[in-house]
Amino acid sequence: MEISSFTNNKVKYLRSLYQKKYRRKEDKFVLEGVKIIEEALEEQVRLEAIFYSDYLSRNRRGRRLLDRLEESQIELVKLTDDLLQQIADTVSPQGVLAIANKVNYETQILSGSDRLILIVDRVQDPGNLGTIIRTADAAGVDGIIMTKGTVSLYNQKTIRATMGSLFRVPILKENDLDELLKCLKEEQISLVVADVDGEDYHFEVDYNQAIAIIVGNEGVGPREELLVGADKKIKIPLTGGAESLNVAMATGIIIYEAVRQRLG
Amino acid sequence: MEISSFTNNKVKYLRSLYQKKYRRKEDKFVLEGVKIIEEALEEQVRLEAIFYSDYLSRNRRGRRLLDRLEESQIELVKLTDDLLQQIADTVSPQGVLAIANKVNYETQILSGSDRLILIVDRVQDPGNLGTIIRTADAAGVDGIIMTKGTVSLYNQKTIRATMGSLFRVPILKENDLDELLKCLKEEQISLVVADVDGEDYHFEVDYNQAIAIIVGNEGVGPREELLVGADKKIKIPLTGGAESLNVAMATGIIIYEAVRQRLG
Image (tube, rainbow over the protein chains, first blue to last red):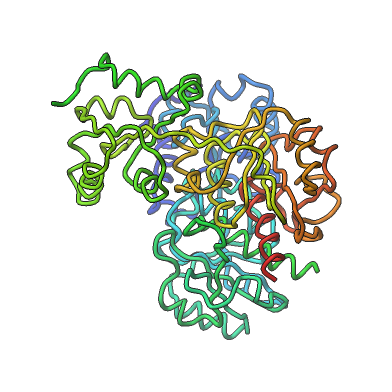
């Protein structure tokens, strides 16, 4: 039996999770498409339910995923192609949506020796946030802290750009900047902030210590409180003609300098 | 007098430049929107003609641009809002399109001491290519060589992502890989290629010499001929869980390692 109606209760619940308010209340979010759901299974993410349509079985990779899901304990709900397409944010959800449970990390991710932490302050573009998370995962950071005003992690564009890294890196949200700065101080984590007016180049910092790197909003950079609270302001040399770098790029360049120093 | 018809000769010419064939034949391309046209004027790009509509004068920045264009020698052609919108690729062309002259660089960009060259082999995504160009410009590379099969530089998405850097970095296309490898050899430019199976980390190379860095296609990496022809294969350490980095990110990380060594 395929569900074809928006008013079905399961469908209503699924649709509610496209709103931030309900994602927060239910501590769940939606995944769209074959690849990211494969990644979620790989990383043992707890999936609540799968909504799929005939579209999914129209290619081999989709059929393989469906076989795997049928062997699992996860609830499977069949929808019409049309309904599924209309629910999804993505243009091609490939006939499959999943409800996933959020993992809520605590500031305990700050504890431990030689932590490498990334703080993302009000980055607006979901593609940028996703790329930052993917790159931070590649670089092996210990955790990412997002401040209030940062674009949603559970935006489909963000999720897609992470390429599955959102399931691997501990990510938490901290709305209170004072609290955040206090925590970092208590854990003796040195704080460097990327800023166009930075005093030192990004490679003039010693990353062989517990350290948090702050990157800020695309237009205005990190907030004043963070600039004031930081131990060091760093910049990436712009030796050519461009006025600035994309924020995800700048983040990658800085965290990979930390990787270089730590491996060297 | 506003032009409202697709069959007007000037409009027909403009529209032809949305096709690669005519861009190549005429050695011209189209710019869309206020910001990139401002950048073009800043960088003394030769503009052939401007097509604008009333939309442009509806905000201060647009009016300022129009004033500046009216004082220039550039031909101004007024279209209806509707027609301009229909011609443009971009969803919001902001009431202004320009025909710009291509600049054709020669392989002479390879000559000179301590060249830092970037070779882009068949990168497919215009956003990636644009970001690569922007980052290479920021890093002060001496030139970019694109191989056959790389997405068009004059795609509106590429142009936008360069943030004006396409007007500043010498960029040339080389279809013949053998010829390219020969040129690099003649100029005694050392060749490193980024590859997931690289032997050395990207920071284990000495960039204080004339050097060309090759980055390849998003899915399959650089072509065999380039891998074989290179002096060194390098990789970026993936110390965390992610399997790969975005190609623009990888490029930025490598060229900024070169910048670090050269400034240090």
